[in-house]
Every structure is written in structure tokens, then in C-alpha cells.
Length: 317
Image (cartoon, rainbow, N blue to C red):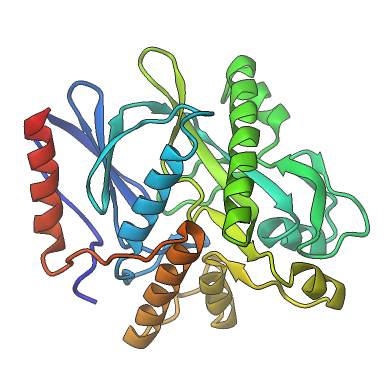
């Protein structure tokens, strides 16, 4: 698919460095300014797929930016502007080296751990007698170390984070407080859309003046799992799979085709038809989560468009 953005190599005014993550590319400029470009790369099992998904970067960037604006009254964030559908510009931060994962339901990774016989995840106990997709008595925080591109995130307990001094006790307590507040707000926003926010992850950073702020994405289908609320109880009582909104459908397709990111496994070939179907699914996710129609940006010259929009914004600053 030629009209996707898989890699960038811009030279913006005042540019100091580029960091390339699994999905986003971050340009650090002078005056503590960051330009974050959401590519169309697709990551699953911590592996970047060889083909991009049309409009995926725009979808993730717009959901994250709108969700940040919907939560800025309870948790400060890094965002300053969105000069392009694929771009967020904000304040440079030193990222914490942990992802704050919070789970309201036993799904995905937690369910796979539970099925293997484990009753503890990241030092947090999981009750006996639970079924996959059951609601936890209270949401649990299960942090993960932040992996570099091509490496795997790893579960870690709060105790290990503090013992290894990855985050100070004082800062970690703020991260916990913010994580719970964001999950509560995300849950309330999901209810309005007829959805259940099942689990999600948040990333935080510290500004040069020492303020802890929310960074990266929030409540997107890449970072979160949603169920449709209608029929949830009936499906649980019958032991049926839940109807969900997340990129779990990509993970399940990969598993069915013999890939889970394990050593020696090869990424299965994704046909153009399958790529288009994934793009359509992401658009459905956007419209369900945001409750509004998705407007496709012009992707005829996506690199040129992004470069021009960012440069125009920076000239005005």
C-alpha cells in the first residue's frame, strides 16, 4: 500500500534529534519542543509488521489528542497543538521507563497468564474462580518495562520498580494516582459510547521544570481494549467471546496464522485485501470510540503534507 507513512526523515528548523519507536517517530527541537508523528506502522506482539495500514496513524493521533483534551482537567499532559492529522506537537519530557497498565477486566495478557495457572501478575493477586473477561473486584495496575523497538515489554511489579530505582517512590505514587483517575474518566467516556473500557496503558514523562505529565497515546485501540456493553453479561453467562474494540483482532489473526512474536516464527503475509480490511476496522474503532464520523485526510502526498504543515506551524511560533 503506497499511500501509507512507514518512515520519516524530516529536517525541521531547530531540530536536535529523532527517536523512532514502534509506531511513532519523535523529533526533538530547540526550546523543549517535540514533534510526534504517528506513522501507519502496525505493531503486534512487540513486532512491527512489514506493511502499513492506511489512515491508522491519523486515527491514533486524533483519538489520543481528543482524549487528552477530554482529561486535561484531571491530569496535565504534554500536548500543545495538532498542525496535521498525523502530528502532535508538545512539550519535551524525560519519559518514565515504565508503562502504567491498568486492567478492569481479566482479558488479553492477564487472561493468558491466568489460564497458564498463575494467580499473580506484576505482584498483584488475581482472585480464584474467575473466567476470561470477568470484571476484577477493583481495577489492578500491572506495570511493564518500556521496551525499545524490536524488543519485548516485560511485566514488572511496583516493588521491583522501586527496588531497582526505575521510578522514585514519590513519583510512582503520582503515576498511580493519575493512572486511576484517567481510567475512571476513560470508563465514564466509554459508557457514553455504549462501551466498556477493559484495560489500557498510560505513559508519563517529566518536564524540565519537574512536572509529571501524560505523554504518548491515550484510550486508542492500540493502547486499550474495549467491549461493547450491550450483551456483555449474556455473553459472559454463556461463556462466549466478548465483542470487542481493540487491535486484538490483529493478534488473533496472527495467532491463527502461526505467529506470536516468538523466536523462529515468521510474520505471515498480509494481502492487500487484508490490509484494507484492517484499515476499515480501525475506522470503525474510531467512530465507535469517538462517537463521530471519521474524515479521511488526503494521503496522495502524505510525507509532503506533514512536512509542510509542521513547518508552517513552527514558522508561526
